[in-house]
Length: 224
Image (tube, rainbow, N blue to C red):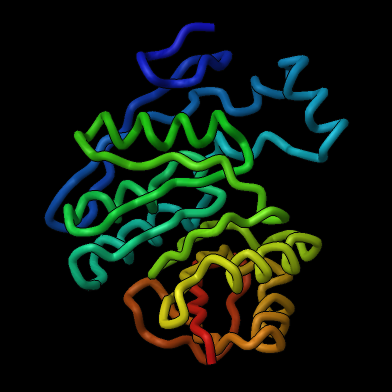
């Protein structure tokens, strides 16, 4: 398995694409054949052992609209940003493209972290990489935590909310993009029970009155 310098070696190689963030663009590489990882013995063994499905190579439907929302947002210079479940790292790239924020890309899968950091380097961005298990949060706090397609599995809600409680700054925000999946309302209820205010936004930043089905929505969390 060969790969460009700094990228994890994967079967099928990479394709390079350009993302328009509205006024600026970023380049990124993603696995050309994501399903090919299912044939790698080490990946299969990790799934059997830990339940770690190789989802990180996929370009999820909410990733592009979320990246554009992040790029259009305005926070102060020096804002600390953490992307969780980074995968390809589009949200991290969008945050780093502002040249104003300190960005960290995290994932439980080390190859995903390596990919996100390498995509940052492809654009001349310095993105910090962090292998992070939500069950074991670290002693750091961030002003903004981003996640794309991280609430689809209701079994992950408790560790995700515990990690947010531990690692989100007291006055921080969490943005979680979702493709209108069935467990989004349940997650919102659980987040409120955990002490977070939850608002729901569409692509252009306007409030949504209700949850969508199979369509982009952005959940914004803030401590009450």
